[in-house]
Length: 159
Image (tube, rainbow, N blue to C red; front, side, top):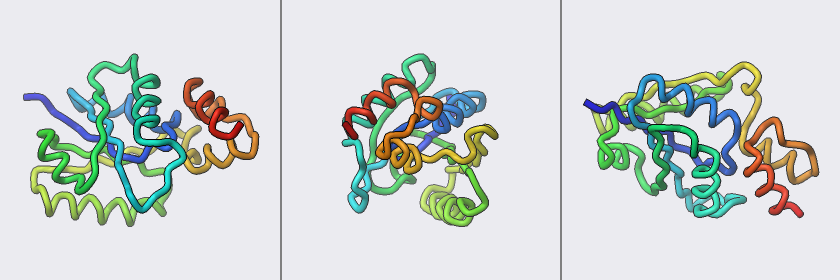
């Protein structure tokens, strides 16, 4: 039986922290669906298509990874994709309360769905997409925090 996991997020942009979680998730999932969420209440820097393209480039070497997008309920997306796991990264204690509520709601909506929380590598604990965007917008060097393709895309956005 294939164990399918979903790693949902906005990935605006994808960071080295995301890459770390994806790499480590593959140790306990046969297939990982990296699912780009469409959230109409947010105004992302990158369009949905740009985020999908960046993920494809960044993750091209990862076997067992599929990249898709979704809108609506994660539980329904998981059910439709025969997923039994949701992967979520926790950077700080402040992330836990929201993520815990979401995990319980998802399991209420789809009882076979479990959530696995992963902490990032120590050197990436502080990293977030919003922080990377801010540093890039202010002309800072983000090369340690993102794949070179993402760095180029950020430079183009803020040129």
